[in-house]
Image 1 (cartoon, one colour):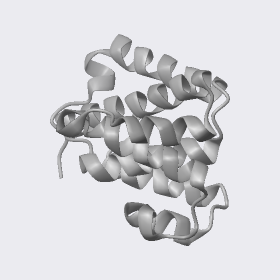
Image 2: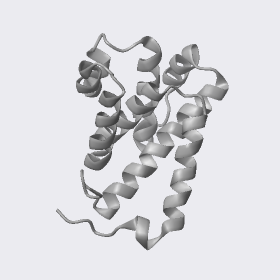
Image 3: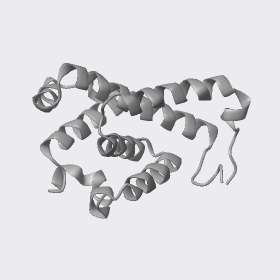
Length: 148
């Protein structure tokens, strides 16, 4: 496989801007496990092999139970996720596929049962961040191990 371009070298300021957004996420108060689950689920939907590889390894390296990684694509049928996590994953799907149906009120309501308004904004930022990373990786031809 070959990358189309190394955007990090072509436009370092763009890469630095994304890193600032990532830094915000790490200081936003979102639990690391929840953030990784969001990253993996959005990356599954978007078909981003680079990000899937990175974030599944990250979550497993944090000591997460393997079944919580393996079953993420079928989270609705898997009993290993909390109701709070399921609400965030449903939000992730709705916002990643926003053109397909927006954000249904019932999804918003389920999320708000578990997350405050401020936390809701953090979730939106988390979902936007990984969707941006996915789009960068896919459009520039990044693949697992391309920077090794």
